[in-house]
Image (cartoon, rainbow, N blue to C red):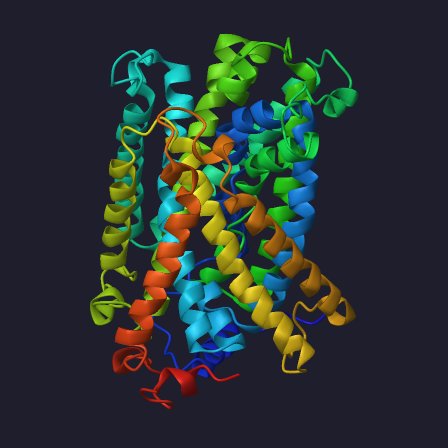
Length: 519
């Protein structure tokens, strides 16, 4: 067996990858293989996603909504495989932005980065709202606004709790990647152990067989497409969980040997999430005392855990869920900062020179950390008296993530068809499976984007007040972000973009964006 090459050899190769984009290395490489894996799986966060939207999936599709879990995994796994191949070739910060820019052109790259950046900020707010779904179940003392029965009590209290979490992630992210990695790694370790323990405890308390997943609970009645219509709505609950695996690649400039570790982390994160999350959902349906009544449709997995495990063990498990939510929000915030940094050093954002400045003390971009935290708080404040805050904010975030992913998989497919795509030699490669996997990734992304953005009242305006603009909220918001953002780029920034001199590779110097990103 040959010995592994010295670490500085890896650094040289990884920095050579940066030079292809015209960048010089600035971020500190301190993250090992597990740190990279932890970043990907904490963004996906099994306990955060399953506990946050189980109630919605169950209410919309009954126990049979479980089948949306393997469906979403199959589609997202195709996307993850494409991303793993890209991560092996281009382990660079702001992965989605730089990949799209490299595969397509600066215009497509900017739109992908813009959509991903706004989606990430919305996702921070969406994840932080999960505190409300768990903390008051642990103790009513965490219901600071009213007693939870008022029309706006829950939504307003959710904003208060979420604001505290966003303040925490902002501070931790500002103090550098090492502190973030330590907290993230510890949190992921707790989440994985807690998930396995939960699976075991639910398994020993089952009261019905796995055939429960064939029960639709009558949710298809009244739907234009019957149960298919109900199932497509319920699939949002699973779609919310399985994304963000690209975070492992977005930390490529701070990782050791990222061209090897990032692809593995991406694949392992989504596979582990599928297996563990699928078992949690299945065993929850098999072990809860009753499948009837409203509590499964309003309180979700939090109710199941307390019902099956009892108040003591149940609340202990809910504390683990809180840890998972915390590290998930931290991972999303971290990824958003790296994306902002990547776009800013290309002079693609307002005040780019300031946003791309890396603190010599903390080794991380501090200003983007604060700006992103403030914007996430602003999204919460706008929705502070919105009773449907959970599904509306979450749905919009997911739609934009899927669109950003499409802006990578479509250019990658075009590059394959034109013979311009060359995987990294000796690294992760799909080989002859690359084209069919890429085609499936594009078809899946397009179909699910339409499903997610469709203006259904059940998703975007399920409760009073009923207004057309609420029902069409996702279409209007995403359309405004895409059209307005691209108009700003086209008329204001297009001719100014290019690697800022202070971030340019010494040999390359400052280069126009079109030359710096030509494939």
